[in-house]
Amino acid sequence: MNTSVTLQHETIVSVSDLLNESRLTIPEYQRPYKWTQRNIASLFNDIKTQSDKPAYRLGTIVLHQSKDYAGNDVLNIVDGQQRTLTLMLTVMAIIKHYNLDNTTQSKAEKTIREVLGNLTQSVSELAEQQKFTSDISVYNLHTNFQEILRVISRGELSIDHIDFLLHKCEVVIFILTDESEAFQFFDSQNSRGKALYPHDLLKAFHLREFSAYDERLNPNIKAQTVAHWESLADSDLHRLFGQHLFRIKRWIDHKPARSFSSRHVDIFKGVSLHKQNLPHYAKSMLVLHHFIDDYNGNMHRHIDAQAMSYPFQLDQKLINGRRFFEMIEYYDTLITHNRTLDADCTSDNKNDLLFTTIAEQHLDERASKIIHLLTTYSGRGRQGDKYARNLFDNAMIYYIDKFGMQDLSQVIETVFIWAYKIRLERYAVKLATMDNRAVNGMLFKRIKEATLPKQVWLAGVSPLKVSDIQASNKTPDNAVYKMFDDLNYLADK
View 1 (cartoon, rainbow, N blue to C red):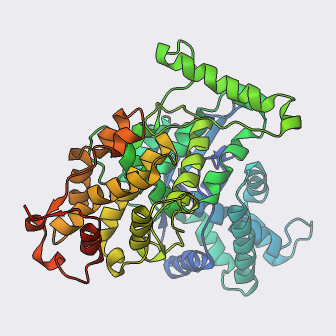
View 2 (tube, rainbow, N blue to C red; view 1 turned 30 degrees about the horizontal axis):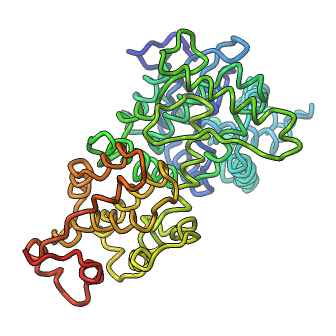
């Protein structure tokens, strides 16, 4: 492989040249290996149907050239992990099927040795260099290896097909020296691979921000810290960031938050406490950061079995690295335990249990009716109702994050009326409707500026004029309309 390629140039190499590159590395931030047997079948079908051509392009591989912890040059695979690993598995299966570890020289073995060339040794070494902490990756690698071995054993991939794959099938290689540019370049490509989510970029950034102090604290701290992150599906992380954390943080500052994309990732970047010349505002964060670690590591914890978590707040400055992953686990737990959406109201029908934490509180009758309504009324699965629900959920999450469960009944009532007015005022509630209510409404500002819980609910919210309600919403079977009426939030004028 020509590793002198620059940002402005690309190089085209054969599969054999790709797999002979000893510096290829699967970086920690990559997603698990998830190719299925269907992907394997599709790849081999392409090879067989295209084998009469002088060359066949398999796609693009985007690499980030950097140094590992020992100072050695490595080529991190930013895009193309699934294909590259599958090609490695294929060569390993070929070696196993033809029993090339022995010294016999049958005609077929001699031919396949010539086809493989140095790959017999280089792929084995390349495979040994990779580390896979994800159980999903390990399982899929083993499963696909066995499937490829079966394909070869059945004769579906002949020696001619193998020769074509290794020497006539090509990939386009891009090598970039800046990791953020590598991700941006990947996002701009129309490749077969699944595009990275914004949270993948954040994972890469914050993994780099782990400090030497963290490693001294615990050599396995990276794997342990990101364990919860890795346990979540991409759809769960995408919902956590896009529907909750991103919107709350933007709405706190009266900024629109309709769609979370890669251009918004800086919202979730903060201060690196291990860097020199910390700004003055970060000194208190540094003290608290080390105090918590010292407290949890003290010998007395072996006696009292107590632990202290970092006191995260949605409107505070983020701490890069380890604390970021701890923060995501904290808010995933908080939001999951306090989400009001039920299975019918989520985009992927996951079983989001309603208010498991709030349900333990002693709510008054009015608040209990609201919670019951939110999880039972027939129209709750409509898109507009979901948007109103997202307003309600995020305002409640922000309040609970700041004040806990104090004055919860009064706040539930205030937030419900504020959020669901748009459901009655409009025939159709759209994303922009929800976003504008959050940006231009005063509730998020009220929570931000409050120093006591009562400052959030004591001023209340104004009733909804009956004349402002869409005629189609003024029906006896409209549960939201009836709840406004029962709570005395409808005004004639």
